[in-house]
Length: 402
Image 1 (tube, rainbow, N blue to C red):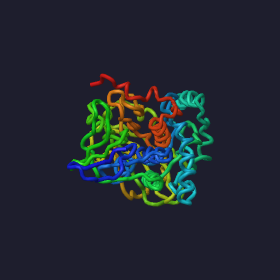
Image 2 (image 1 turned 90 degrees about the vertical axis):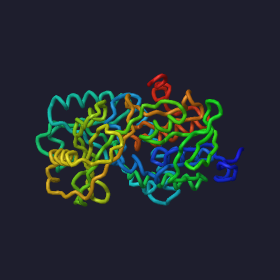
Image 3 (image 1 turned 180 degrees about the vertical axis):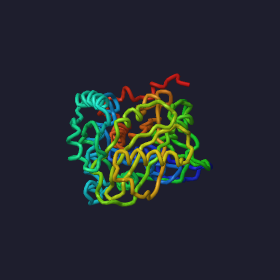
Image 4 (image 1 turned 135 degrees about the vertical axis):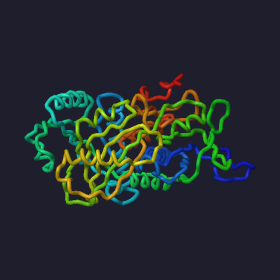
């Protein structure tokens, strides 16, 4: 195997890895662990700190409830199974239950204020059940039994016991630490500025300053920046950042048992609008804080957290849980979801640039889809048959897109 050298020929990084993964977020970390467990030599690079992008700007959602019947839901169900396998491996490595990543399947409750909206939720749930989702209709009289502090007068909802949550930064760090134990190299604060090519084939990455890392494959797990990395290979991926804001309350006594969200959340997720959309999403954490979302708007990488968005989210949360009216905000934060026009992730080797494998475009579902994505990427890298259908997710669907 060839060696990795810096410009000028001096050895800089040691033995060339089998694969370079660009992106040290939760998806890149899951790919690194899965590839390392498959026996491959792995190097992970990121221009920032680990989990410094989208993975640190979300709520850690493991959701099937917000995905209508289709390819993304199938991948989510596939990935939930792999999260159990990954958690068992992390538990063995760390000695902490489920790897100590605060993984809990506490369930999700979607609620509606009007009977006609309940009917829409029921139709969506029928399609989900056909694919294996557990979805339980909940009448208005039963809502207080599930969530005692919910606002009165709601028309009903659907309970999703499979929904869960984990701590995304902690999960990312733990996945990468487990990969390191298997020999993976993780380099943060290292920017990829080019891709090494032999003809059309991608053969490695070029770093700022000119150092090169040769590898037989490169994995694009760069989140909302994945389109920029693809452009280095001369291929177009229509991935755009979709900003979201999250509010965090002071620690409170247990008030919210599950992840609870208004029915409008489903339509917001599926919307193609670039403008601001928001709906109440409220959940507790093991530390006692309450997380409040969710907003969506395509404003590029604008880092602002507009006061109007914060007020809107707070008002929507209080409308759903009046008990929160007196709660103080501890902090707010924002992140950028990697949005694709068809709302599906991009997973697979790019026929326009052989050697470049995409694992990106997960939008707000990157946490739940990470474990399954990692397994699929490891299968692509080793030539194993894919454990899920990659057809609808392949980058070839953007062939010829401008």
